[in-house]
Length: 310
Ligand code: XMP
Image (cartoon, rainbow, N blue to C red):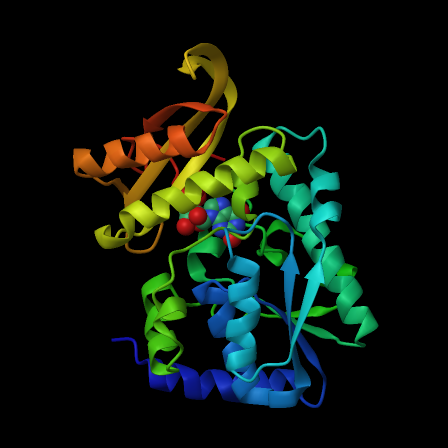
């Protein structure tokens, strides 16, 4: 049986041993994994830690403000980096899923590397968990935060990496979060991929397409809060469909809604959502987002699908 208190105790010792007197930077997205990793390092080495939130323009509605506020409330020194324009620039012309992940990863690590250099920091904390490592090693997809397993030496970006959660699966990370008394908005937070909405804008990622999927995501989350499912989100398709808006034909956008149950993201089941909830989501998405004319629901389990579309 996993014992979170024992894990925390050992982890604090290991972090102190690895870090010594050096300073550490932690990229925290506000997800349970990166926040737990950040908080463990905060507990282990206190003022030696600087948390950074990189605003890549791909986060959910209100998320940048929420994350920075939460970190500050936890007593962690936090720096906000606005890199929105730089991230959208690297997505220009890229339509392949793995190419997009690679572009995101390069930009993410070079942004962090720059911050680490400016702050003269040698270590970077990451919230990599076991499922990320397994899927990357199996070649299913290259999780953006798994470097050494795909043959990238993180020192090429100018720092060493600390991954306190690499042996844990998501349910155990949540146990650690509860044991650390992190707020429920963090310990019970729905998983959200590192490359964020870029995986949910199929094809080229632009600010305009991201804004559409961000709004659709907000609607899906609002209407499905009570389901208690593992992940609930919206995906914007790269092709269009015919519809009618304001009495006129509109060749408009297509949104797919995906709601899955899962323990650890390794397998998942498409949720059988009550039809009235699906209807409400479809009505809101097509009414509140002018360019969307069609809303679909994904019925596929993992496998054969993956949770994300890309
Ligand atoms: P898939 O789509 O592989 O997703 O079934 C499994 C879990 O991982 C998340 N995911 C990612 N997380 N970087 C991440 O940090 C990624 O590139 C990535 N791709 C998928 C996904 O949201 C799900 O929770």
